[in-house]
Length: 544
Image (tube, rainbow, N blue to C red; front, side):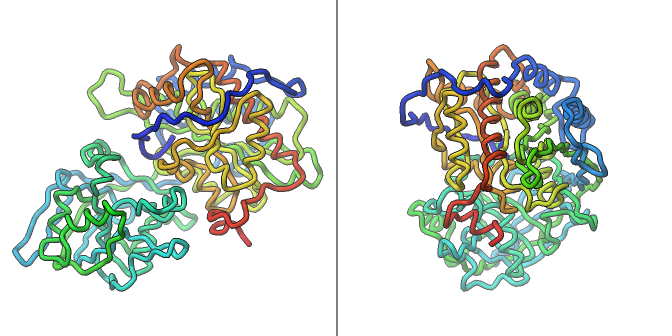
C-alpha cells in the first residue's frame, strides 16, 4: 500500500452517528459476489506467486490472470498494440554492499564513516561507479515553496557543492501540501536547479520517533528501480547528483564541528518549529560506491469498458489498483513469502469485480478505464509510467478512483476518501456511501499525508482529480479502528498478510458496491469532476 509503514494511528472517534445499515436503490444494478472476490484474492495471494515482486515471474502470472479476467468480461484491451499488457521497462540497480567509502575532511583531520552503521546509501541507477567530492553547505530542510513563503536556498550558494538538508518539513506546513514540497523528488529538484552535485540528508529527533534509523537498515539490500523513458533514460534520476546518503543523528554531528551553529542548536530550533537558515560548513567530503545494473520489465494491465453516450464515451473514468507486492523476504523465518492478500490482492480483486459489475449493468455514459499497475511498492512506478505514457489521451481521463489495501476484516459503518476535500468528487463519494447505508468520514490521520502516497497521486500530478477510498475505521457493533490498527501492527508488509478466516466477506462486497456507485455517478453525470476553487493541487497541476 503506502511507501512507508503507518507507525502512529490515533484512535479517533469519528463524529456523527452510524448510518442505518439498510440499503436503498440497489435493485437496478448487479450485486457484488463474495465468492468471486474470495477466488481472486485466493489466487493472487497464493504462495505460487511468491509475493508478486515487480519484475518477477509471480507478478507476470498475476498480470496474466488479471488480463484473462478482463478478457472474459469482454473489456477492450488498452495496453500496447492491441494487448491488455503495457510493458514498463525498468533499470534495476543493486548496491555493492562492501563498496561505499565516505570520508569527511575537517580542519582537525579526516573522519571516515562506516556503512551502514553511520550512514546509508542506495544504488545509483545512473552510474555503476559513483564518485563525489565537494564542499558542504547546510540548506535547512532544502525546501522551496513560494506558496508558503519558504525558501531554504535564499542567501546560500550551492553551485558545484554538496547540500546538507534535514529530513521532513516544518511542522507548521499544511499536511498534504507540505508532503508534496518535502518529498524526496521535489528536494532533489530544488538541489539540481541550484547547481548542487550531491545530497546528504540528516535524521532528526522527530524522524527518529517516526522511523528510527535502525529500522532503515532492514532495507539496505533492496534494489532501486526506475522506469526508463523512450530514450532509455531512467526517470527521476538527475545525473547532476553524483551521490547521496542519509546520516544518523550521531554521524550528522560531525558535519557541524566548528560551524556557525552546532547540530544541537539546529535541533533546538526544530523543537520550536523554526526553519534553520542555511550556511556554509567548514568541511568537505569524498564519497564513492559501486552499483550493479540490469534491465527488467513488468506489466501494467489495462482495459476499457466503452461508454454508451456518443460524445461522453470519449472521456474516461480511471479505476486503479496495484497488483505488485514485496516478493520474498530476506529473513530466517520459515514463511518468507509476502503474499500481500490485503496489500493489494483485495484492491485488485475489487478492480476486477468493478469491471464485471459495470459490464453486467446498464453501460455508463462515459468509458471506464481499468488499470492494474506494477511497481507501487517500489515508489509508485507503474502508475507514474502510465501517467506519462497513457494509452488514452491523458486529458480525456476526467477522474481517478484508486483501490489500495482496503482492510476487509470488519464490517464497516463508514468510508474514508483521501483527497475528497480537494475536488467535488466528495459529493460523488458521499452520495455513493449513502446508497449502501454508510457514511463518509473525514481523514482521521491527516498527519500521515496518505493523499500523496499511493498510485492516484501520479494522476493528480497530471491534473486529474482523484480519490483513494478505503473502509472507514468505524466497525459496526465494535470499536473504532481496532482491527485496522491490528492489521498494521501484525501483518502490514509482512508474510502474515495472507488470506485467513479473519476476512469479512460482507465488508468485501460492501466495499465493492460503494466503489461501483462512486464510479457510476462519475461516469453518468453531465459535468466533469472539478478541482475546488483555489485548491493547491488543482492550481499546481491542472491545465488552466
